Length: 340
Image (cartoon, rainbow, N blue to C red; front, side):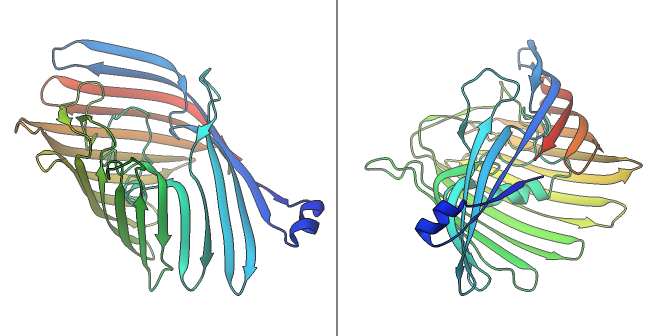
């Protein structure tokens, strides 16, 4: 349950205005086991406690002020938190400031989710669980957020929604780190259809794995990339909620420099079964390096959620990704998460 506050009277006296402020967040703690089998057959296993179903703990402050004439000012300041770690927290998460109206939509500036993130999330009934890439759906550079970005979200018209984002790398004399992306979707009753695309000029050299459908953590097919290398990603698909069950299908791709490429398709199903919600995602794809080395990939994930209340739930999941005949990532976890 989010806690809504009203600006103190002293502040109102100074500014002549009042703003609603919301404090919220999520804490997720899960016992997990992750294992990685490299191309040479070496297996490494990790076990521990951490946020497994949400990806990270979070604390945020959100504010909204009525500007009159149908306009509002909106702001959010979010932080990554660490309920189960001794690491230095908090660090910045989704944070922005902007204005909105029912007629022209909303403009936000700050650190924000990429438009493609919501396309992937809405097509994955398992909710992008796991902190490894075990059964991961969609390119990792789409399932991310962009700092120094401006995002425009258009008002919905006859079920059609549109979002565009431009990000800036802020590097002198180069466009490295710059990005752009958009999404176009349609909703009608239980139907959801979406297309999303994005381009990023890498802010630094390194390697490209893509983490697309079935990619392997720690031993992915890597392609050396240079500063400013263009990474392009697309994703499209549809889902339909029948009430008793929801089905989804999506296709995703990510390329680096025009040669290295990860592609994949995914199919999902979720349904309430008694007090539980069960979900599964099955995926397959291909990894191609700049040297034209091609490897088939597969992934699957299974999730069971037990709502204890509107804000607290237990969860269990297991996921597996394979590439070729040897390389493999597996992860299983059981935990509890609470939103407030």
